[in-house]
Picture 1: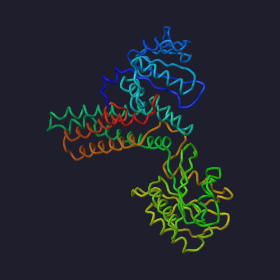
Picture 2: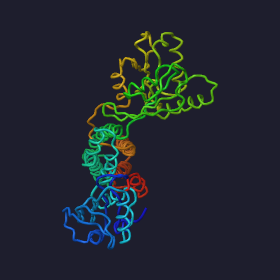
Picture 3: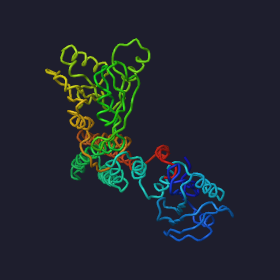
Picture 4: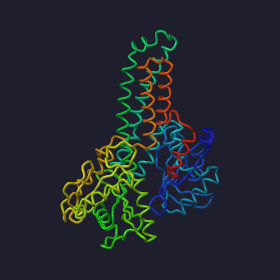
Amino acid sequence: METNQALNNDLICAIATPPGQGGVGIVRLSGQGAFEIATQLCGKPLISRTAVYTDFFDAEELLDNGLALWFPGPNSFTGEDVVELQGHGGPIIQHRILNALCHRGARLARPGEFSERAFMNGKLDLAQAEAVADLISSTSIAASKAALNTLKGAFSEMITAIALDIANMRVRVEAAIDFPEEDIEILQEARVAEDIAKTITSLEAILVQANQGRLINSGISVALIGAPNVGKSSLLNALAGEEAAIVTNVPGTTRDLLKVDLVIGGLPIRLVDTAGLRESNDEVEKIGIARAKAQASEADLTLYIAAADELAAQANTSELTRNLDLLQVSMDPTSDDGAKNVLVVINKSDLSAVADFPQGIANVRVSAKTGEGLDVLKKAIQESVGFGQENVPFAARQRHILIIQDTLVKVNAAAAALTENLGAEFIAEELYIAHQRLGEVTGTVTPDDLLGKIFAEFCIGK
């Protein structure tokens, strides 16, 4: 990664609109000298925060015409001088404008470099900068609302408030270090134990919300697993609302993974139909079955599909249990043993009722043919991954979850050190690590290699 000084001195440019043809194409320019170079290209002076209609020239050659907008720093997205040239949305035109800017000293921006500069110059914190990319890539209305809330600072405000509480506790704990014989009494008078308990409660609450935000932001993968002809493909079509999968009475029709993206109650979901589980001598089908098992282990949720008419016999319910054990998935959605969640879906409920289903196995009864039970299944899918509401307060990422979990571990360790009278030094050290770790959410404490990885995921012109 380049140094911050080089980052702030370079003049960068990029196309800020999607590739292809369109009514408008925007080329963005940011950095020292943006105003001067844009003025040369336009052949007329630009006016701060005013759209100026102009031609765009490269030397004496006319490239295009449109609008030029100049945003003087620091009151711009990046905190630097920014110029946007809005011309016609043709790739040839936009690339010619880019070439003209590069000939005058600009360079092409790296992915996410505009947002990176906004972060470096204090216009956005790291969570807000990530929300820019999440807002652009959101796949549902609920996800876009959550990302916008993060961009406006809802998530950062919560994190900053907790970080401030931890910092204040550190001050009081470290003040007791110089009095080792009286440190316990000093900490008791400072009500450190009560404040640590409040911080733990706050971290637990924000962890729940962050998990909700991650789900609505990135969605979940759901694998449809089961024996041949139990209606996996029919169920996928019913949930998707379209004929996405081929449905026949011939066992082994599905031989490879079929993926369908949809939104259920505001939660983005990727359904993956898989080959039927059975003994087979067909080499292609055997590969498909192996992929089915692998998909079950990788998915956030496995829907094990069974046919109601076949489960009437006790032998088939025993086979179901054996298959679940073979897949090494948890039969209890609330299990915390590290296994993947599984929800048994008893399909073809219009053909037969299943009595005496094995106790302790979460199940939903549906008919892909008639639609019976589909609403119950959709709700069960959401609840199985802890998704309880559409209006999530903010969007979050997996890295945020891990940071909050690590912070919670360290604050709990500080509480244990206080309870066991290990001394103010131990408590202060745990709180220091917790404070440093939590700072990685907003970027107050962030390694350079992490920044490079985060912004590399952005589109070029943002």
